[in-house]
Image 1 (cartoon, rainbow, N blue to C red):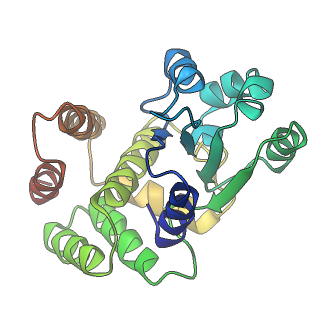
Image 2: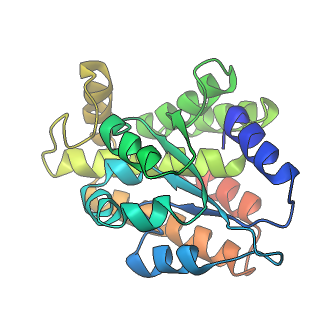
Length: 228
């Protein structure tokens, strides 16, 4: 997560470091996962901090979450919303229901120099340039970018390229930028559809196995990047 988001969460944890921080993404989202968050309490009964990453860019998760707005807003959760296209009206409704919501447009702050290295890494993945990817990966880490931030950048790049193979439009990619769309189309030419599916599946396995304690996340992600 970006420096601004890390600072905001650290501030929220200052009063009670025992609070859980739970992140939901299109990959980990489900109604059961949301139910678990709504019912979760930390050791001292403080509601968790909920990070919603790119959920409003996924049509299914956005619709399902919209139907649970009153419960989410009144749960006492600390809510952080991250995404390229944030639903202004929907977030306003959540706030009207009494929730405290902080918004972070994009993966990293545009004022943070580290965002350039993240984009360089995802661009190198799209170009299928192993050397450029390795250099950008290492520069990102030196700039203070976390492996998780790189991970989600890779996931989004793979997802966009897969959508292009399915004939996706700019709206399908959740962007209004012709430049971003053309880059995705160009990147998709470097991968076959089945390759994108395999690479995405490998990232999913890394994520889940790391959270089960079966492997070291940082090492596994680095090895994955070197195999591109």
